[in-house]
Length: 142
Image 1: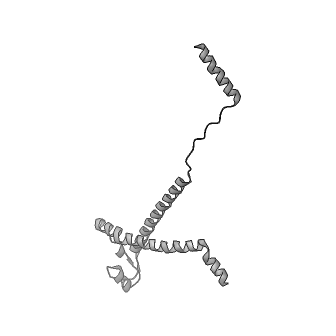
Image 2: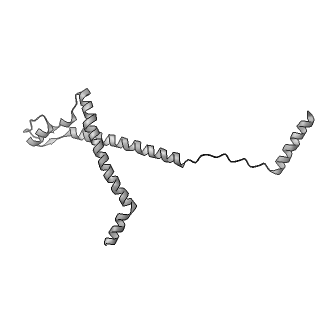
Image 3: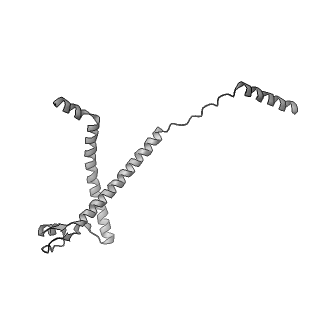
């Protein structure tokens, strides 16, 4: 069983998947920071919006104005966080789309082989003979 496990782990696609998951997790953190630390403050500065504290209290006991304090008082629906997560997803999906598009374009350009002009095959012997006769007749007519 141990040898089968080693064989399974040593397969290239399993290692590629592991690397993809690790890089994807790190990339997710970058996108999360981009949304929360750069995009959302800009939206808040120009539109007066701060999605991080948008919530709907589910209890009359919740009177706080910030999400963290409201969660301590009772149940809330934090739809502001949901909006941030949707923005994270859209940005991540857009970036992945651009990356896949760039890779596909690069792959297509590498697969295209430069077109080489093949030398035209010489015409058949009878066509060559007729061409020579035509050329001789033109010379004699002049």
